[in-house]
Length: 316
Ligand code: RIB
View 1 (cartoon, rainbow, N blue to C red):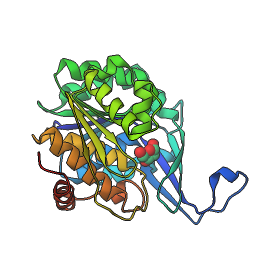
View 2: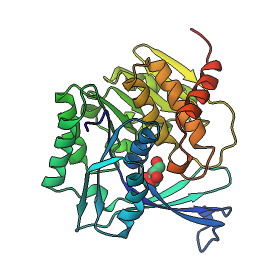
View 3: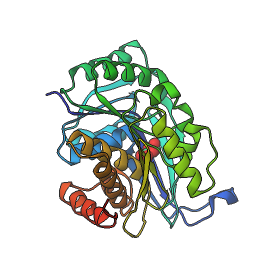
């Protein structure tokens, strides 16, 4: 069946450690717990949509190894369409080593491996998946994969007049020609600075960059703030949307939940402002639980949190 939500991006085997030690000390440091999980930005967004009952298709690349099983098996169990995922014998599946300290602010060491190793037939799968998508579908992308795959997807989706919603990672790989083809982008503050080529050291800088990105051709810019809120910039206006206070357990995958929720809200006909409210609601829920995919909400949890976020946003 054709999908209305496509996710092109990284597919990773996540190895997650809870730590209380200071990583900057170096040497051998103790971990409190260890978890093996499915992850990757493309996979996380697709899973988020699937959990909300949206038919989602994942497009990505894995190796021919047992790490691919770790990354894909939980997705397969949800009925997610994996027909856009190809396998390479040349590189292992991507691996993310994630250290989560007590404040939840994770550090990720990423070996991109298969995410960056695409051949002609896998690039063809990108074209096919986009061609077969439902009319009015949205395409979500991140830049943690081969730039060629991103370029082909942008071209194919633009031809179909599909709305493209991008995550901001890796910010340095987001070029002005990409921005012109995006409907929405959701970078964090550092990524927004990298995209705009500006070092951000204050709230004023963040606002300036949000405005700059909105002026560069992207209709909806959501700069994700470290406190869980976001700056929404559309033509001419910047608005702050705050996150309700919650206990932050683990920030892993919260940004992917944000991007997916924005894309779903736009797919379902919500305004940019409501889409940003849904983004903040999704990431607020995602940081409240351990891991990424397992912390993602169901529809009623998300709607309830979106009402809380909206209540805190002054009416216009
Ligand atoms: O955004 C979170 C994801 O980033 C993790 O699942 C990990 O795989 C890294 O790519």
